[in-house]
Image (cartoon, rainbow, N blue to C red):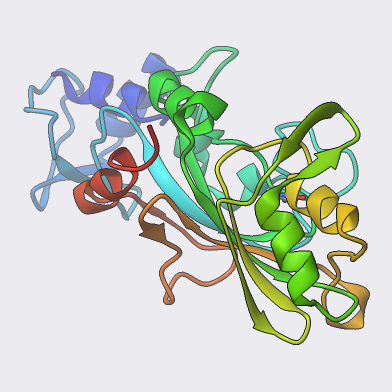
Length: 248
Ligand code: URA
């Protein structure tokens, strides 16, 4: 694949811009400046530098983000900054056109923190977010009022939410502190955790009235302890295997 096409596919701008980056000597492959935009490389796994920044070629992008509080999972946020501003420009521009860049797999509320997956692979996004596939998602919940066994049992046996008469059940629910629960859900209804907790007479609310909801795991993939809020990283083959084996 020509170097200018590799850069184009990875979101470094139009073909003209990519060709210009190479011609200006701003692209390094295997430690050597390559100034011929048509130079041919095997793209798979290629490591290169653009303007001093290390990149690796990814045919499709699969990433995880530790979503901080105070960000919206929308390309056009209304009140808070967009999570997409936490990603480098090439990842936001991959593929070009109207549907450029990666998309979040489902959404977390503005005040929810934790594990969020993003990709530009439509099939992967569909599989991960489709209610049919039942990929389990684990949430650490802090409630305003003390949690009791009755609430836990109700969450496990099913509660009715306002938009559907069919009860929704937690796949697992464990009390982890006086006001804390670990809740596992296999659907992804709008504000589902908050509405389920409200349906048992409690309220998701962290200390000082903020947040209270953190997603710690999707399928068998845990949010890594060393990925700080606001940081992202590529998913490894092992990460993808941990998610691919989840759900139905
Ligand atoms: N359920 C919610 O209520 N909010 C989230 O952000 C995720 C799940």
